[in-house]
Image (cartoon, rainbow, N blue to C red; front, top):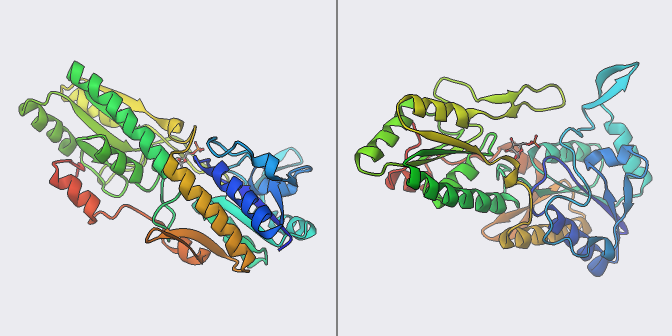
Length: 360
Ligand code: F6P
């Protein structure tokens, strides 16, 4: 293995820089291999100057830094890229240009750090002969095949701190506090932070809720003398028989942007006579320094990805299983996206503690 490249794709997550650092250090120090960085996801292969050398100096000091020194893009799918032709926006498949650029660079491996969407692109490029190894990233923790993605622990920690802060002001004013958290299709952040932060109601995409059941919980607490309530609401939560709430519609390149369910739930509760405030934590969950756990996991993932490439094991993704970092086929990881197990011990424990999921 003489020359590898690394890129970050999709929404950022705390720990991306820790993976990049581990990739560069392991490739250079263990395999004496040259490393190239690709700017802004797969777009870098199509942009002049978009691929550049990464040496040890380039990754110095980046371990605790959020974001990604390589830049990222969540509309950079080379199989469906928005381009302007004769003044009109059209969608084109430019994947062959990306493949040609990769071959022209003489890459022995391409390490792709991304979530579900980016890893699907990696799988498709793998089918076109690109030697890819994936690293699972996302604060939502919704990539299959691995116990956890890096970035999740940091988001969870920030969300839990938000609950701690909301708790005191909720209690002081006898209010209902709704915290809308990220989680498009999977409610892991809302579930884990809700449990860690003492929420009374947790609404997640996997368990459609009834408004009346949510208010019933708030009312029950009031009657017992707890004159405040905390609600943990995933942005992708939806009422039974209803739809998720979107702030912006999508198109062939952009996925629709979720947002607004917290406000809807808050309004409903207020209409039933309980003073309510709504907080949307948003991208605070994605920005800033990774937790120790995420730095530790990201570093192990990055180093393992290089070892996987050096062993010639392509079309694979590093994953955490039984607390060990292993590599599994990308196809297997992407076959079934990870979702909260609605019958698992976490949900069972929450219900046992009197937390409502708004479904009963
Ligand atoms: O996939 C991670 C995620 O944080 C989702 O929970 C959220 O819907 C999405 O990213 C928002 O991404 P962006 O604001 O970058 O479009």
